Length: 327
Image (tube, rainbow, N blue to C red; front, side):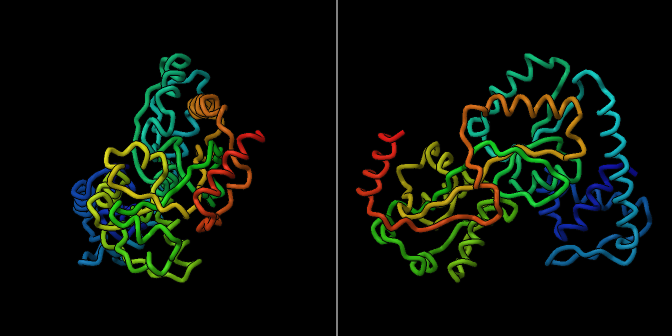
């Protein structure tokens, strides 16, 4: 059997769903199915019961799960220990990206790393913040970017900046949504992003705080699709202002003027790998490139601070000008 088959087995066992396991592993659902099928054939036992609702472990699968976890953990620890013995910076590093290269300042980071460490190579994988954090914890990602809070004590993170989020609706709805009204928003269709994304957690937080039941008409696993659906008049979503400002359908979108919230953007890696030469190299390069961006020291908590700003738009512009004049 192969180590990747055991990783796939654990991912399916933890997610209970082939598609979510595929997202977690940065692969396709057919590939996940093939890994499980090959593993079951080699072992001669059925590991999962399959239904329309997902997959559940059989008694045999449950009995083997912890053995698989120990093997995967041992292999990861072996590799990490070998990496820590190196004096030079070389090898392949898996870099997790939760945003586009421009938002993460990826190109200047990679230029700096290429100039300093010619023997270091990279595999770059894209995924939502939750997927990146899981990949770090499981060892499939070496170091990566994520948004929101991280409660995993095994992971070290460095906050880089705050990401402003905005609520986006079709331009045709601007008139009725120009005043703050949660109950009106509850009646509208919503476009939810992946449950592993920090923006989805923002929507969940809104629902808890305001006692709402927002209706998910569509689910999209990335922002570009969500914004295009909004532009077609199909619903409301939450995304970063940076994503909104660069979308080609911006003229067909309306940013609700009263909604205010932000989440931290951070770099993270396993604390146990902090002294590996490659991890140190990437961490130092990222922090150097991001050094000129101020961070908010109050922004690291799990509680999201969001509100409807009821200040009239003209007063907000005046207040903004006053702040700039004082700085």
